[in-house]
Length: 310
Image 1: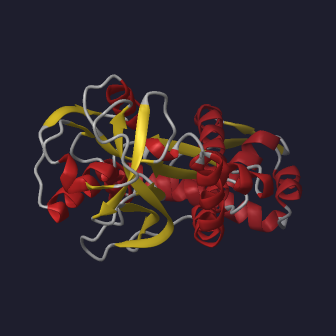
Image 2: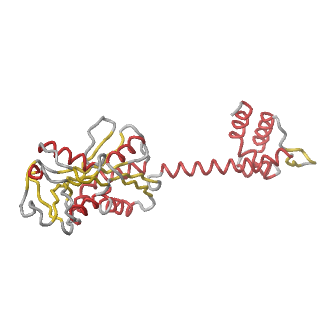
């Protein structure tokens, strides 16, 4: 934008309402009444705007005024600009309204069937105008979204430990079990040490998923490095592979046909689901309200959701 364009922008931004009213009414008295301003004030402001623009916007015709060609050309453009300002204001007001606006929520695929619907349903019962933009993905992906500001809140596991730019609130601890096919040599056992499956082919999520990080830590704690037969992108696929006898896995409890879930005696096998948000970014009011709701009521809601899931 050059200097002349900047001068016009500043001048019209300051006097857009006066210019529009005078050109639209074709009469300073009616324009002043519409604006709720003294006629003398409108006259002085309009004259000053014309001088600063260096363009006559009206001609005096008899006892009245008429728009010049420049005035007639300017009127529809300044109306569009005014509409744009009104739209911009409405958008900002919507963002700042804690009862409206949009919450951008990221979460693990495994939290999608029950946990996220339970949270949103309870929140929307109190704040029905709030909208949600949902993103499912691996832990690394949703945490990156929080750090870049693309997400207001993430529900993930395990709890991130790197850096101090993220705040967390633990919501639930899930017990992990060794999932083996029906008829597997370990299936009759009441519980197992993870080391007993050291030579079994495992089916796991790909690296970057939170559950994969937890399982890798369990392998290290057990002192084993079992062979990996398959890597997948979602837990349902892993359960299907286990049911088909193609390997074993460590998963959150979820009764599945053809799969036996064995409690793990050693090492302690749990994952902690947490809410995560940025300490460094300013959250909009609606996002803060949802975050406060999740922190206060999330543990109870997620515990109930887990129980319903069996």
